[in-house]
Length: 351
Image (cartoon, rainbow, N blue to C red; front, side):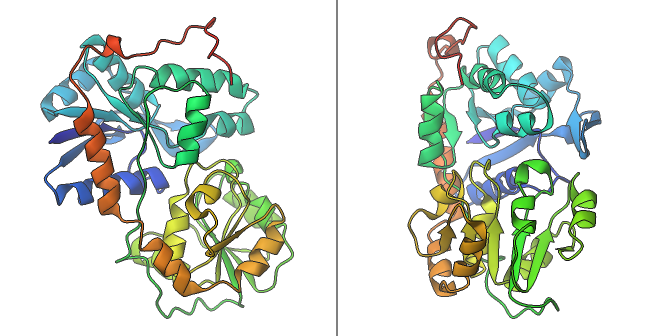
């Protein structure tokens, strides 16, 4: 099977979507599925307002069509709701081609944190975007259930995995006072990092990542250690050299970093919200509490071995097989037979 994945998130971006798609392609190849990508690298780009490190593509309909036709794919998956996703969606609708989508990012909360735009309007736009999809893939059962309640149709489960060959315990001395509480991810307002940085904790608060809020936060919290983005072995060493992984975000749909931390033997401290709650559940590998300081301190007592055993159950092989199975289930029927069109007066057009 040849699958074309359209995505606005791609290298050199460092985030969970990019890592998920890269690992998906590698794992799927092992059982005969060939995944190619339509990314911003094929188009002119411009810096995203308020987030200059991210560049958005300017896809023309003609070039999008040429690239899709050159891929000669059996199936098309749209991973993001940005300009490339919209352009590929438009092509598929015009040519009556079925396609699938995935829900990675809670844009309503992200956008409202930056701009005075109602979350209801953004959810409405997302319902429209995914309404024509043959299958909307969600990372966890709780997210899938929420999307259904919000009026999304054809929602299916696509779990995530972790690269245990890269992320595993190893002896690493970061040269910082212990215990080391580490947070890995984009340094941006939606990640709620101040909830972590405001805590009174012993040892060191370590921030691994980059983003538009890094300069301001490093000035406001000089006692914290900001080391910028790290990838591959350097990222794995940052996990392995720490003691507790802190995840202050309240808006992530999954949090791939949670599995990377657990595979490195780090227990998790987080709020009891979608993402950490869905990944960890009641397993004794993390503390989920509205008092994040309490969660951090109690997590120091959790077993690293149980964290390893938990992470070992989440493989990229299983993730890729689920994804390919969903693509294979698509029947080549008229997309209009299954699409759901959301008009403004539709009762589902509410948040």
